[in-house]
Image 1 (cartoon, helix red, strand yellow):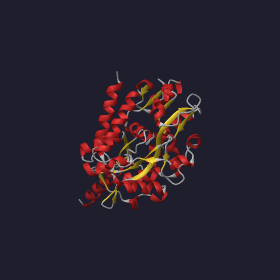
Image 2 (tube, rainbow, N blue to C red):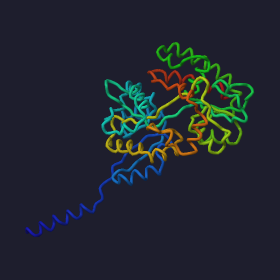
Image 3 (tube, one colour):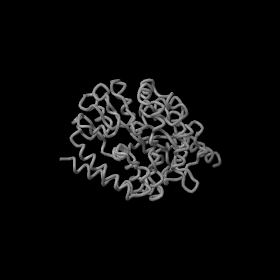
Image 4 (cartoon, rainbow, N blue to C red):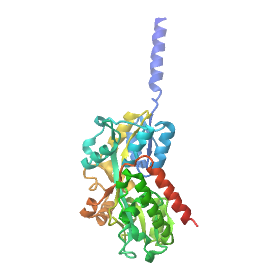
Length: 357
């Protein structure tokens, strides 16, 4: 009987050993191109016990999904630095980060400090930086050599030849072009509404200048490369990619300053794979992975020397776009107070309704 018991125990041990352990899933909600297949493959090879499941999203959708679930359904999210404070204050959808588990020494100190300043609540930090870039103008310099400001997209000499995305960026850029400081006006929402009303009038009057509103980088690229448009409001990363195909198309920081964003890493409040999330963060901060990531996204990773780690074509595009003075003139997005996105959304709907006919 004793022999049988021992044999049964041995067989059970063998059977258990042959059953593969169930992989942990890292549920990542991020921007398109921020989790390319080649990087996921390398990560899963290094950590065979973790599978990465990716949902591509944007700021508005990230907040909406996490708000609907109280911060459940995802283990790591990548909202922009200005979209965390108010969302956390209103909806409690994130949890503090343990910076001791992140290789913050690899990060560009100014970007890390900026994100911490924007996302610290009650002494706890809710995000760290990942990638950064700007929004400004993309211009075919052979066809629109004098186009240098947000307002130039509405210059009658470019009638039917410009484009923009009907999102909050164009509201802010146009406000700066009209001599306003929309970020300063966040402290007085009645003042901000006045600015939005003036911007709406301006952009509605701009209707005839627009070939179309673009919705994604692919349709914008198609219009630009085909010559349908000569200029557009854009993310710099889209302009950098096009520069690789046509060096007449360059990113132009607007004269009032390009709008600068930092996309972050944040932990959803009910995420279940924090350790896997920290592993992913540290993995993508490695120099060789940084270059692969920038090749995919076109953006600069927020590590020390991030610009130098860009692929050669992207580095050339950045150098063609920015002077030191342009960098000094950047306008970093400010934290969005409660109520501002609703105000902006109504303004965008008003513009859309007036320009859709």
